[in-house]
Image 1: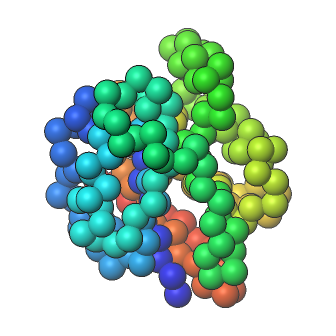
Image 2: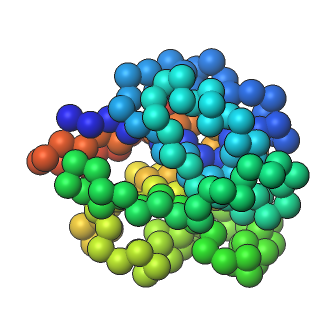
Length: 183
């Protein structure tokens, strides 16, 4: 059994001063941590490394971040773990999509639609993965579509109308399961 901690949208220090203590409790014992972007200050990767080895992708806020180290983060990770293909992306696949989605999400009743659009977009961009991990919408999601598992761990930072959360992915030779863990 291989356990992976998943998180996204920490937005430190813009929306949150530091990682919450509950995050360390929820991710204790994982073998690997995957951060699906918008960490903002890459120094938090050092904090996450205290729990387990950590990999991260760049989020859309990295386009305007003053920290020089964020540019080394890839836009996506395509990993082979325990014989499974796991793709990690923030969810925004271009600068144009980022601008359009941020405006679109301001419209009433559109927040829930982001988690329906992002899985389709990721499956087209990275066909054939077993698991897709993404953030961007700040809304937790665990869903299976066309044989693939899509996981949005939600946001670690405070988000209007949504509880802060992370997720845990458990990979065995027989199955892949994910659960959302409230902070």
